[in-house]
Image (cartoon, rainbow, N blue to C red):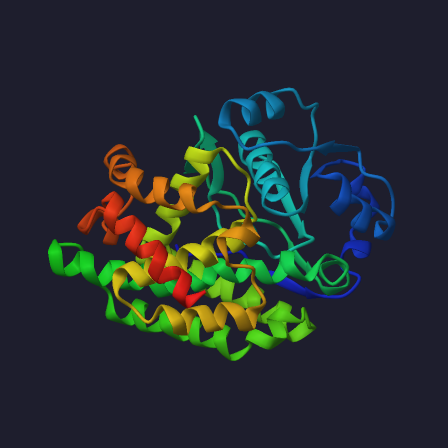
Length: 336
């Protein structure tokens, strides 16, 4: 049965959580998001645990050390959300999610994003009951953290191109209906770019609904093919090589522009959408050096040989040489 997380939209939603739920709940969060949400709650939860990284061995030890609880509540961004999802999944408990930023589609996916030796892995299956999209909370957070989440929708642009390529070069199934619906999601993002940039209620609701629709299409198809492609592979690889922590949506937005240029698509068009969304996308702004871009492009063929679960895309089809990487970077400078 196809199932996705159903968001509840409104204001003051966190404050409506019953005290009996909170008294039996562990909140997984960080200091800043907890400072935003805590004053609105009816009472203090059973425990509050600040989260760290998502390396699987560390998260497993962390969750194993927890006392008994009835509800896992994720408050914050991707790491807080995924830690709460992991705890609910491993301990078979109810999950409630209160994202304070829409920086990723993690609240809407059933799988949990972890790291194994620094490499991205997805595991588990868990759904929130409920997923609260509280506009009061989201609008208290920095705008850039919310609008950057559009990167996980922008990736449709390069992912669909990869998918079409794979269907032509192999026997991989291409679903025209899913692809067309994905294009509609991308167009809806562009249509509401200014609302999303300004973090209006309409913009935030639009972004959340696009997350839901994108995840639904992936569930219908049976994989993340409609929205994840070589742009994510570049992002995974640069995180692995540099060990840096990036704002996910900003990194993906940059990767979409870079990868679309390598694919031969209209990178200027997608760059203009990124600009209208207000997402930082230059290497300097997101903390990437030119050398790191080149090193990542050159290392990608080896990375993709090792990460065999990643579906065929442009970097498989045309592994970048150092010369091609440098030429691509120069073309990118002209666009940015």
